[in-house]
Length: 119
Image (cartoon, one colour):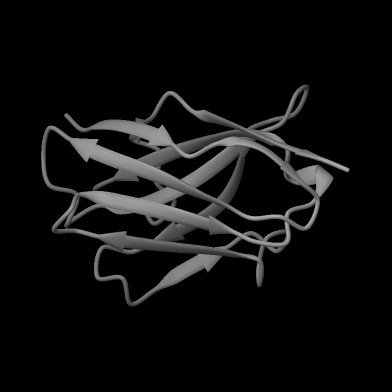
């Protein structure tokens, strides 16, 4: 079992930045694909970004490409999501996810952290 705890959410103005963290425990995430999803009010949960276990490959939703960067440190069992140039439509609860088998991680979830972008 992997436990995931997100942090770093908050309120920010449009154009601002936030860095989300996801701390994993229970077992090492070095062999897991890690990712971030988000869910806005009244909408389905959607994929944001993921990073393969080797950190050599990361991929993003088109809506965040060029603005968000996912990274990981397997030694620290931590994943980050650097979010720049934030837009109103980035407002959502952001969830960290981990998966030992899938490139789109959904086996384990954190509790989520709120990101609110205002003008």
